[in-house]
Length: 465
Image 1 (tube, helix red, strand yellow):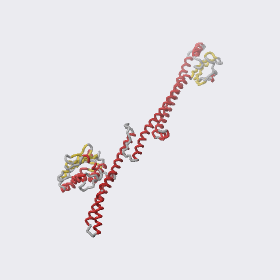
Image 2: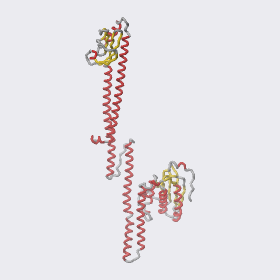
Image 3: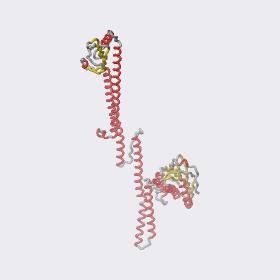
Image 4: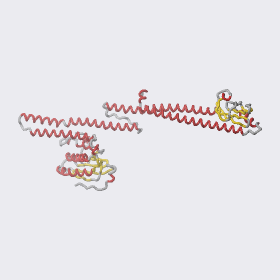
């Protein structure tokens, strides 16, 4: 990745931002620690100075300065002026003991340099001046140990800061390059999709992080997009194929009517046939438009609590006689209270389409059964028949628009009934399956029950006849 691209990368900017914040926090913490250590060492030096000064003063007796002078000289003999200063002077400023002659300094505690007390060099001292009888006592300790300790701490802190900065920058660049590479794969995939490669998908790293979550969601959206585009292509092909015959038939009928009219023949039957063919074509396009509206979710604003059992009661009341007229039987074999959220009219149409499909495509004497049961938080509506069924290899295809089995092409219909059923099921987040009924076909649709209301249904619903 080029440096210019890296600087524009959002992951790199975030990594740099957090790296800078981390380094600033580290420096502030180090500064506080350094300051506290400095104060602690200065306090320890002050305490050591006080203890030494008290010890020397304790050897003094009035009219007897020998012990005091010996003690001070002993301390001075073990240390050079660069390590510590000791001085005892009389009232006239004459040196009595120690390793240097202290100038006249008022009593107190001071921080001084070598030049301040008349010595060579650049040493720093913490000095305490006190009075013992007629004498002036000066005791001072060098800051060498304190400064050396602080220097070691400061150097260690500088090295640690350098390591932290290098780690922050290196780690930030590594993480940014890695995250940017994943984002680049997303951009590359979307670019492929925009150029027509609808089967392109984003690779999932398997880390389960937020980028994986986004990639999974984008892949799901691309999957839906691919299905929609393929569905549109299939619909276009099916419309061109399936409507070609009725349009040609309509054109031939109109041509025959025009020819008959030129010969002054009665063309009313031909016009009625043309109108019937036109109505069939219009009904097909209206059904396609209705499916598209349902798939777009245009009816979701009409969703409300709906009792599926009440819908089955309506289906039973309407289609029992229709099935009898077709020399078949329709029974509702199992029912239970089941409240879902949905559009009552669409649900009624969906179940009615399944029942009509069985009536239209099954032979005389077929038994059609409708049932409703609750299973695992879902309401399962099943429509079963004892007819010829649908081959397993065709069951996924029958939900396509305008798709019809070869054996069904002689029967009336446009091949949109099951497409409408699938669209309504998807709108209600329902799962639809087909299976053998031995003999015949059983279509099952599982609707999610309303979570709050479903467990409270306990009263038995009246059964329709």
